[in-house]
Amino acid sequence: MKRLSVLLVTLVTLAACAGTQPEEANPSTTPGPASAAPPKRVTSGDVSFEVDRQDMKGTVYEPDPAFGRPGMPLVDAKHKTTKDKQRAAIQSTKDPVAKQAQAAIYATMLYREARDQKDKAKEREKLTEARNALKEVADAVGDKAIDEITLRLLGSYDLLIAASADSPKERTENYQAAEKAWQALLAMVEKDPKAKDVGDIRTGLAYTQLRMFKNAEALATVSAAKPDEKEPELAYDTAWAKLRTGDGAGAWQAIAAAAQSFTDVNRDDLEREVLSFAGRTDISLDQATPTLAALAKARAAAVKQPQLEQRTHYELIARLGLVSYALAGRWTDAVAALDKAVAVGGDIVPPNDLPVIRYSQADFTVRLDAPDVAAKFARQAVEAYTPCGDKCAAKDRTDGIKGVYLLCQLFHVLYATANDSRYYQPAHDLYRLLISTPGFAQKAEAEQNLKKLETTLKNTKVGTGTHDKGALGALLPRHNLEAQACYEAVLGSNPGLAGNVVVDLESDASGAIKGVATEPKAGAADLSAVAGCIANRAKQWKLPRRGMAGTTRIKLTFAFAVKAG
Image 1: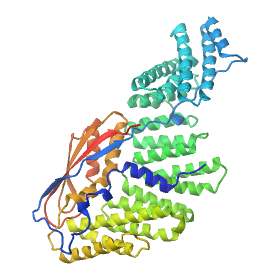
Image 2 (image 1 turned 90 degrees about the vertical axis):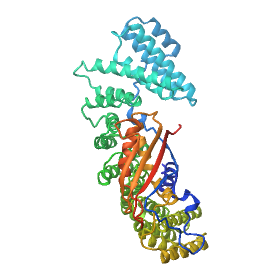
Image 3 (image 1 turned 180 degrees about the vertical axis):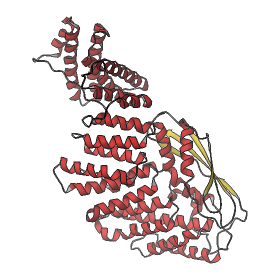
Image 4 (image 1 turned 180 degrees about the horizontal axis):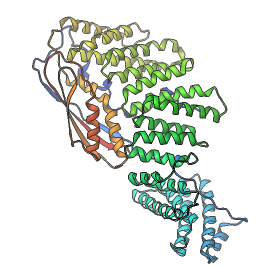
């Protein structure tokens, strides 16, 4: 099975989700002035400005039906028959139990035909016909005579049809019908103390409730069931119910249990789900890695290739850092995960992965207010292209080195405007590195910028330097994924949520965020919950230190909307 490369995952996922990046900043932030003179310094202490509005598109995450939905029960005829004969048998049978059995056989015949359809419309037509036949019989025998198999079939078919519904109204109606059937079935079997499939029925009901975003109800449904390793689907739905109701630790425990119990499944999809939970819960890297190691071992065992285990383990941890933690805005964890991936991979780390890993660590570390560490990773990214040779595509190499150059320019701008000396040496070292790098297309420009940087150092006076709108307009949007993660967490309970969140930041000369206010104010639900989450994240952000005493006030506006499709 072809595996997604780490490079592809990184470039596609982060480019699509990260919003405005520093390299897209206003051209006015290019390093240094036009002449050798130092940049103009603001002499007043306090500054206030508004960063351009950030348009954020959020994804509504939902349970995967391949893992969270119970299987379809099939009832075959004892003797070969046709659909016409089976329809006639339904009509002629009077006994309620036998009539429902005939309807179940007919539904199974249609289900098998639906699975063979390549046209989705025709597939849905067959499923709808099966559901309607079952419903007609259910209505004919009445609620008192309806049996377990009919209720289960109705719940299953309504779930299938809802997933392919053409309109929100139709989807809602089918989910409501499915919920009603599963609830009636659960009430029926719970009366029998010897019933063996209660967990499977709870799976159907919980999955339906999760699809309707009835998260508290879904949690109540799964909480009444006893954990059973033979029912991974129920554990999977438990993970989703706990995630959406704020129990991250419980969600991780449940998804880890489900991952160990699933056997005959698509390993790619299962790994994707586990990685997503690892990023969106608060579990640590140390807590996540045993489950990822088990997934790697299971994949190798499934294809009887023991040598695949190490490579899969490396890929999973790399994806955890490059994608899962990055999309959650967990920058420290992302950097640590990538270090661990390289350690786990050892000699098998593909040469073309290493430049991407190191550049990503540099990029993530910028958000952590550690320019010297970011520069170290950036240097490693550039140096990794030499041993990579022809295994690194020319375009990838050009784009990667350009990314380091833009990072270098950002450091230059932050030093030149704020007079934060921590940014000077990283910018200086990266300029010199790039200038000496064979094939670097912007060598002449970098040489000019290096001279401007050195001139700025000579002319800088103590007590000068402040926060600049253009410079911080390039720095602050690097936190967009944190805001998006806050929004997407709330979409799990309100999938239609949209609107603006305004964040007012106040910082002193140290760059620390001393005050955060939001509109709407922080609260427990909807945009207020998003605002509260962003405020908590923003309190940890750091601006460059400014040479001039005073207060910086910044207004950020996040415009949230659900991503189409």
